[in-house]
Length: 100
Image (cartoon, rainbow, N blue to C red; front, side, top):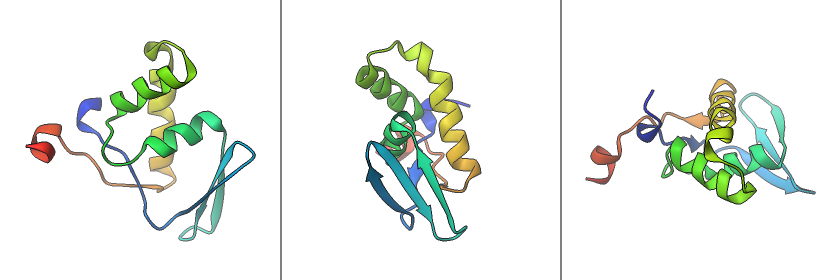
């Protein structure tokens, strides 16, 4: 998978609230509430359909002052979990076709 060709996007119908540093995501389709820690919440907020997985990894590294190589697996795993939970919409596009 080419991370530069994947632009994760949050589903627009989920309800999101931040409470005491944690992000709560209410999925009305499944009836589940997902509680995200600050790191997962940051990744969730970056899933805007405009940022690639690589972009999100770079932003997280800067925000938490850690090497991008050390957080890349966590970003990929977290986005994968969001996909498994059905919280993201299909977003596999290429920058050239989308931006060109």
